Image (cartoon, rainbow, N blue to C red; front, top):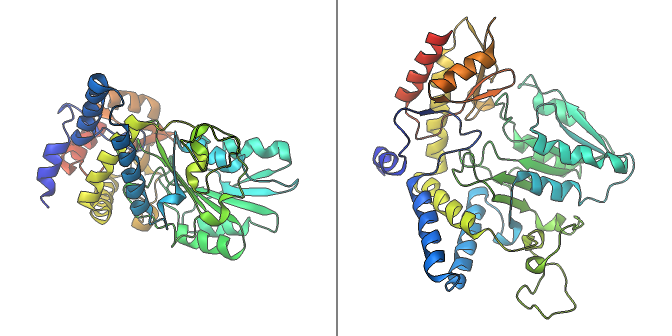
Length: 377
């Protein structure tokens, strides 16, 4: 594999842009854009004449996602609109008892907070545990659990601080104590290996548009077979039944597979796009992507000096693709605005500046962005 050649072929960003915002929305590889263009042209010329071929692409995507997370079967995988929808499926599907609680962190993105807070109407408490010290984060979460804890829900990597969580440790604890384990993997899927068997996850969800370099509007939802029927369904339609396609069937029942969570017509455009993006990740291999991204984030951390406060953990095992920092005694929002005006595409998060390079981001580009930062401060 010639990685430099692949990068040159697949990424055609404006040369005036330094793109360090993959933790928000990723640019597409060339093959993804071409797949969307081809699909659109097919639609305009022949409509749904080849719909059966489209369904084969849907099966292929589920197989790709199965491999990506080492799921036991494609039957465990549903294709939903986004992470919020997937988490809502879980949060609103559990048969809650008054006095139950949910354990999570105090750093979660609203997608992994609001659906759980909404369960307060059932007398359920949402416990937001301090994980600001990455060395004790998992222990703090575990110690917050008790006999009334029904779910431990956590982001694999925190969107603001970039803190990477030891999912295996949490999953082992949850499995032993019969607590449901839910993982929002949007900030790691595509750059870090996730094995749902090793981490004992009951639920894993992630949008396509960040590190998987796919489009918005399509997401992975993994639901373990043993807990699937524990979730009460609140969305219904022709597609989620066991005999989808038998439109005259009066006596319907939900699909036994995770398709039960897909109430209506699939997002075929998104399916084609995400499948193309995942084909690139598979070609390069996750272990290579992880190595390069950790090298890129280390490059940024090595630049940090006395004028800059690092928010992201410096230890490699506690971080992934995000480096967030603050400029001391300065208006960080103003610095962010100036970086954006200088075509350094980043984010303003956790009161600081978040850089999130991908595997194709050159260290030369990162150096240029850091030089612009230095000139601003």
